Image (spheres, helix red, strand yellow):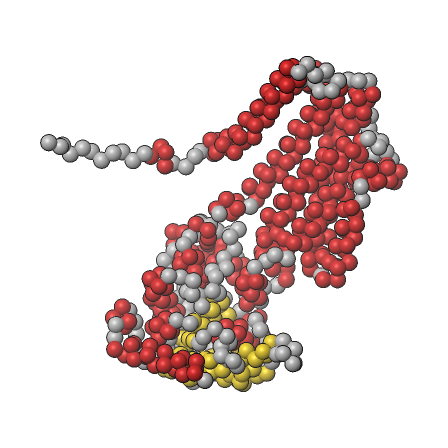
Length: 282
Length: 273
């Protein structure tokens, strides 16, 4: 019973944790039920999501992939209670999405690093902890530990503008994980990075995920990225946004360069690609 | 036959960042040089064309009077500058507070902004006699109120703009953290608005001195700079009037410089690019 809680507290020093978000064994952490989202008025409403149902198990790494307009970012925001669904519901650890957000269950990483340029790198990582009301000393300690985790320990006193795009996004990840949320929501976090940096970030993210065992929902439009990172891929198609197919990724862990060169990896990349191509023809 | 030479020493001195004093000099250097050039040209033109002092005295004559009359000039700048400073602070704070309320509530914005615009359009020459009537014309608040009204408007507009200009992703970040409203205000909205607020303060610093001097013309202390200029003009002491203007210019520069310095200190991220 204690396994997942133990694994999730590598920085255990009495920080905020949300044990109530812990699902009972075998139950999904995130449960999306019949979610439909329409934008706009009745006559010219656009259906961004149509009857989406998903069950994300605790500790899993799920990717949402699909072409632009398939509603993957909208789905992520519905999960994170930043957008209310028109129909359907989302629960996280048995709570509604709104309750989960108020209980600080979500760590968010956006496409842009969205750091506060008026704060130092360390104070950016401290932001969620300030919102949670953690005492200053503890906050500082935790932020430094998180920066160590993303290998930016020496950059705490720098300004975000002094860091490269990849480093800024690592700071954003450190910030999102600083308060040990039970769910990490990532919206195309590496979309703006070059291919080489992106692969390095993927390696790093997997390493962190393996260590923290935080449940991750990851939006991307990169097929290799989705296959390399995920335990499970949800392929979506546009107009209206819906789930086309779910693919389990059975690549062994730990994954590294040899994973990217394995036959199974290429098979899975092909499988996702062909599914997406079918979607285009629909 | 070539011998191996030691690698050239790295030009450490040139790579090293400019020291604080040096970079400060680099910043004000062009301004000082320009001012000197203008003063020299002015001096030469007045002497060369034999322009009578009644039309335009030479800078050297103004400087001589400036030094000779320094005690009276200091009193004049103090009297007028006090009203300018008071009004600057009161108008600035009021503009920010009302702007913050307007940024928070849509209906307040819709109600207050037109009124702010209307206030901003009232000419100083109209407000000055009214405030003289309301307060005693021998109260510093009379002229300070004229200044406050002038500083209020740019501050109101810039505060509303600044507080509303947060990045959508930053808003989503704070929302995902379920940050209470007061934290969104202090940790996100206020820092975002600071460059706008300082923009208003820079404009306000210049306007404050103008408004204070214009208000002097409608009443107030006999020691004020405006009254001084009026008297000197009436007695045809044009060089003295110019010296008073020069003193006011220096005060305006000092006020503007203080705002710029505060801005550099409080928004250091602006330099990082």
